[in-house]
Each structure stands twice: as C-alpha cells, then as structure tokens.
Image 1 (cartoon, one colour):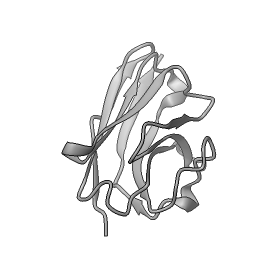
Image 2 (cartoon, rainbow, N blue to C red; image 1 turned 30 degrees about the vertical axis):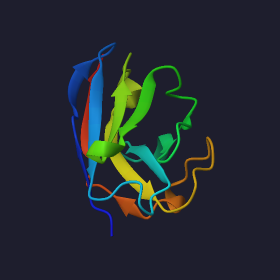
Image 3 (tube, helix red, strand yellow; image 1 turned 120 degrees about the horizontal axis):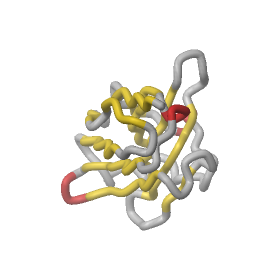
Image 4 (cartoon, rainbow, N blue to C red; image 1 turned 180 degrees about the horizontal axis):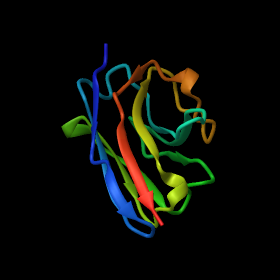
Length: 126
C-alpha cells in the first residue's frame, strides 16, 4: 500500500507559477511510474505528466509540454510538478498517483495507476 499526500496548490494569476509536491510512503520499491493528473469540474481526470521512478524519462501531455516539469527526489520519497506560465485552463484539482506498471510514454492513463493522493486545488485567474 502506498500513501500519497499532495501539497502546494493555491490561487495564482495567469502567467504565474506553482510547485506541487507529493510525499510518498514508499517510492521506488514496487512503484515504477509516478504521475500527476488533474480534474476540472465536469471533466474527466487527465494525465498531465509522468516519470520513471528508477530512471530519468519524463512524459507530458501536449497541453502542458514546455510549461510543466515533473521531477523527483528519491531520497526524500517526493514527487514534484513545477508549473509555469499558468493559464486559466489549468484550473483543476491536481492528483499525484503511483503505478506498479512501467510508464507508457505519453499515454498517461488513470487506469494504470493504483494509488492516489487526495488532491490539491490549483486555481488560475485571468
């Protein structure tokens, strides 16, 4: 069982930045892929970024590529999402997730992730 706790959400103006953190109870052991998802009201939960826990490969949805950066600190069992040039369309609840499967490139699918955090709200105003 993996426990995930997100933090770092908040309200910013368009063009601003936020850094989300996700503290994991375990990290590389049995978790081969970590990801960030988001869900806006009335919309499906979508994958925005993923990272191979025992490597350096990262993957991004087209909507955030070049603006968001996923990273990890294995020594601290912590996952990060640096979000720059935020847009109102980025407003959503952001979730950290862990998978015992290997990352599938840019196909960041919620069905592949078994463990989820409680989410942290990001609101971007115009």
